[in-house]
Image (cartoon, rainbow, N blue to C red; front, side, top):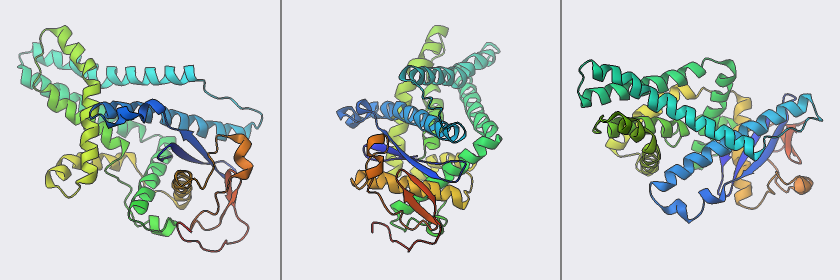
Length: 323
């Protein structure tokens, strides 16, 4: 999934080998004038990313199910989507913010001062987060997701370097990227450790409430750092603080195979084409047959079929990006 200026472009490979292109409109409330307000935009980006991510996973699941059951057109409703988002946020706060509070309380009752108790709380939060990422990375399905995650980063690197969007060219770039969503989450954890280290722990109700109501502020600060780091990668202090983010991506990305990179290339080219108004957004089924987006630049053995990319019978002529 690649985020464009007005839509997120999604490419999904069906079990029969066909790569289907879809697009998801971005949320108006997350891309309004509020987006220019520092700290607030970080919260908007986080919520929008969760929504678009869930929609992308739903579309992927529906495409796989449609291949097995062509008449099955089940979709998640807006209510179901909001419920999933709410449950995800609540579980995230409970696991990564409240559980460390209660565990660190044991150390505090054993005689640890406020600074040490807060430090222990932060350490527990960091261990829980890294342990969670490491644990899900052992699941076979998630391993494939992490492969696609690496492919996504590599095509973004290639695009930013103005290199051809071909499998051979993309292969030269690393699967880690400083503006990754994983980096954002890791930064949230690190910022929370630093911020809470200087907060009083009494009364207990204040300790618990502060860990909840400060989450949006922490998310805002974290986003501003990621935004700053993206344009100051040569700064020594930025690189030092950002290094844990890149190290964490060793857990959340895997070297992709050629098929994964073809899917990632399809997604980024579709996002570019939509932004340049060379492609009709594919969520409007009545317009799919008139989609002018062709061909896929530099992806060998692929050809466009309406809203899908299917294996070609013969090698198509080579194309250059933007041609």
